[in-house]
Length: 359
Image: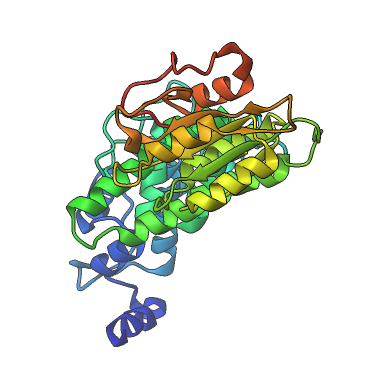
């Protein structure tokens, strides 16, 4: 802590070192030197003619470079804009025009960073195994690795606004979350803070969509869809995504969250009489097929008109498990389709899906 305080105290006078700035931005010193060599994004003054000392204006310029590349601009174009911004010659860009769910808007700061159609994606790395994914994933990963909370939130909001919630979840949020998870598992204790930051903001984005959509055009006669994690399962983000998507479609939904005890789950089913019950299992250790079958066989309602819920087994934890009356949606869009048209299935399990299904 004393070293960091000492280095920060030097900033106003002689600037900070390349190593200190790299740690601050979440990039490697090699990346900063490469940006200096290729695009001229280096410190204006070098101590003793050799050592880089980054003054506050230099730091602001490189921070803008990180923000722009995180939003998907190619490095060369991002460097040009960052240098112009440092000279005060960039005019305010118009807001990004795209479809937005109710109550969701993109902050003006992020609009200048939207990638132009047809432009190549940034090649600057994050250290995360992303593979062949949307450019937005790379931008989101860069912002998360830098622990840039504002940029992470802007990227997530922009993804939902541009693509809609289902595609933003499947094509932007999930690939980035998986990449961060794989990096965390393969690198010991590193990147834990990155995963926590990203998960928190993904949850905040999904809940914002839900809160903005919930309560509009509510039909109190329609039974709700019940969402719950099986006992012992704490991974709630996929259910939060389904919860928000259903709320957008004005489908009544009741979400119980993580690790719901069997007794509580059965009580909720009998009390509210849900049209569908979605059970999420992330790992095989938590998948509880007897519980799912019991729910699928449970009848509720008044005597002479008793019925039962269709049950959806969601998540990779179920593997190849299935049973009578159990459906296996492979992704969020399929779960939405099955929930929207329960009368099109006979409840005999003919639509049981293969392993790896995820809502």
